[in-house]
Image (cartoon, rainbow, N blue to C red; front, side):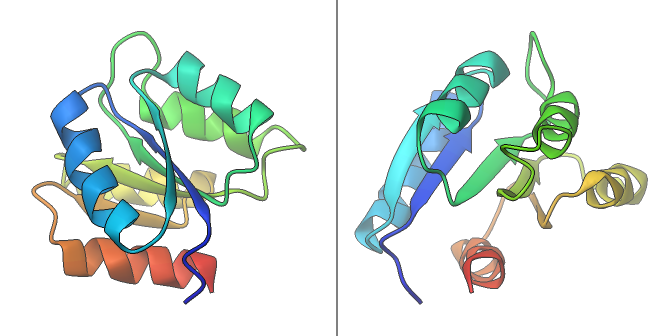
Amino acid sequence: MDTNKNILIIDDVVENIDILARYLEKDGFNIFRALEAPQGLHILKSEDIDLVLLDINMPVVDGITLLESIKNDSALSHVNVVMVTANDDINTAMKCLKIGAAGYITKPFSMEHVNQQIKNCLN
């Protein structure tokens, strides 16, 4: 897999971002970080992002609302988004996939599952 890709992690918990970022940076990915949806949307519009790992439960703007914004923006709709959440509700997962999410990861996540989701999206 070509790991020279840009991944944006959007999560309101710094520790969650740090865990994913450390792991993915070791694999050669370029990591961008955002603690809230508006900051993440700004990065998406200003950088060449290949994949977004997006938390669902965030203050200000939740991940599902941001996912809808991304998929409804013609300049961003091509970007793969994988939802990352502690919510393992099948209805929430189906809603995200219907909106256009490329995958769904539940916390606590295994890095093997994260790797598989990334591989599926970037290949």
